[in-house]
Length: 313
Ligand SMILES: NC(=O)c1ccc[n+]([C@@H]2O[C@H](COP(=O)([O-])OP(=O)(O)OC[C@H]3O[C@@H](n4cnc5c(N)ncnc54)[C@H](O)[C@@H]3O)[C@@H](O)[C@H]2O)c1
Image 1: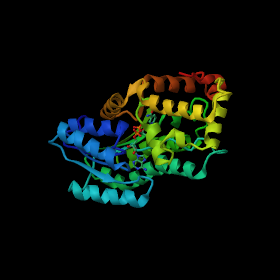
Image 2: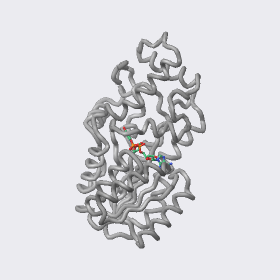
Image 3: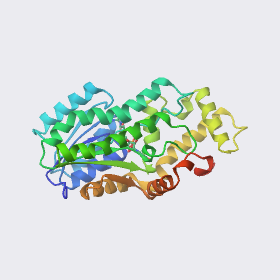
Image 4: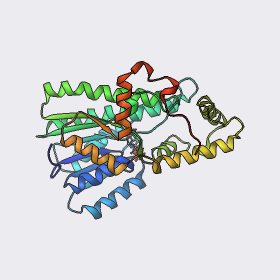
């Protein structure tokens, strides 16, 4: 797809981060966009930004939890009605949360919620919108995985649910390439694998999973994090739980500000990748380097010295 002008895109998780920037940049290029999110207030902010930046395009927003099949099919029906269309050109399966770290010690509900958003969100939206991509003259499905779609670790932290879901997203998208080539050659598929991108995902995920403020974490959760930090040689043996909570809070806040790639830069890289019909879109130099390192020596990928040593800022 060389141009997004006069096309129709669906973006999940358009309320914040990369989703918001995708909506803004698509709209600037003359693309109509339907977005969904579970954070109504954030979505309204995206809507008002885009309405003033790109008043000529049609932008719609819908509350939809992508982990619910019922919500997704209702979202799809509303999009088709609202945009008076029988096709869409672009589907960005972007919505996601981080969570479900330890399979052994973590909360089962949190594990399943993370997996449901990150995998079933992509699956349900693909099921719902694929016939409408096929109806288009030119279509593209863009599924956001992560570097955790090819490397299942988070700097020494267990990261089981998120990684399992992101590996599934990557595998599904790669398998779709052949399926589409055979059955709908005018539709392309890309998997997006971002490195560290400056968004509020850590804070937003906390809100969605019910521990919005790090200060609300339970003693068990804090002990678990402390255990990982100590395993990474962090000198936190004598820190109280409140000190650890404060550090977690700061790290969540710093995640956005200390990133090597901004959400706007990430969206630009993703959209260029779509225009160039690239099936694998690595976002950020950190993602590219990690991809090379894992491919060079996969057996070493989970060795303790593979990750950057833990630093206390
Ligand atoms: N930020 C990073 O470093 C990074 C790295 C790799 C991959 N990713 C992936 O990129 C995608 C976008 O993340 P981001 O960093 O922009 O995060 P973000 O929190 O800024 O944006 C994600 C959006 O998805 C929405 N959302 C969450 N659960 C939802 C649900 N059930 N239904 C609908 N919407 C939902 C959130 O409310 C939020 O608006 C995610 O899939 C994430 O896993 C992010």
